[in-house]
Length: 110
Length: 110
Image 1 (cartoon, rainbow over the protein chains, first blue to last red):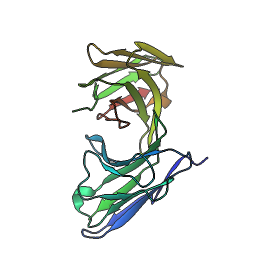
Image 2: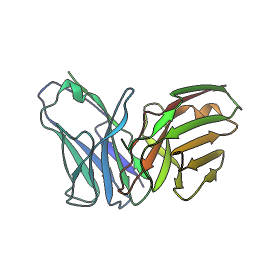
Image 3: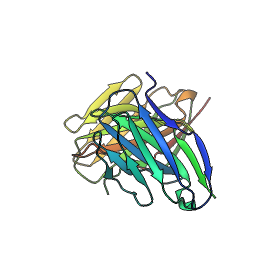
Image 4: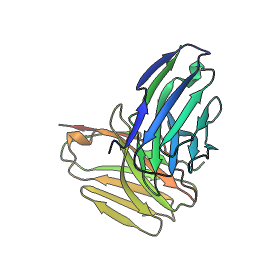
């Protein structure tokens, strides 16, 4: 089992560019999450999904969109990147209690 | 806020000593979870304690929960250099979402 994987691992964008981060899990988990982690801020929930075809907003959803077309995949999109979106992005999945995290994507927006 | 707040923010100890980290939260919880994050990596689940439990052990880890004080502590006994990491508590309320604090950075000096 690969667990939770994230693509890409690193990315540099210019302000205004768009991109999609891909999260994939092979554990048949219903729940999936996108977090961002900034220095001194801990992890903040961006969006989450409680099952295929469903998404919901977390604490800091502005500037991001998500889709869960397949149970194993959860996509995070930035339509027009801003320097404030420079961060490390983590995806996680869970069945019921504990969450399993991916290795993270380090995104820099210039 | 539903986030956990860890204390201290940073802790430095000698190898072999015990490390204690504390967590406070503000809302009623179903359970409280502790996670570890090695530098540059995703979070890893350590232990979960339910709201009706007062103490739980897992290897060198001991977690306590006091729901009347809305607090939890994580004790790592006989620390090792490999325990150097950031530790996060995450209270869980009715939904499946977790609310992470900013963490305690533990450094174990060989």
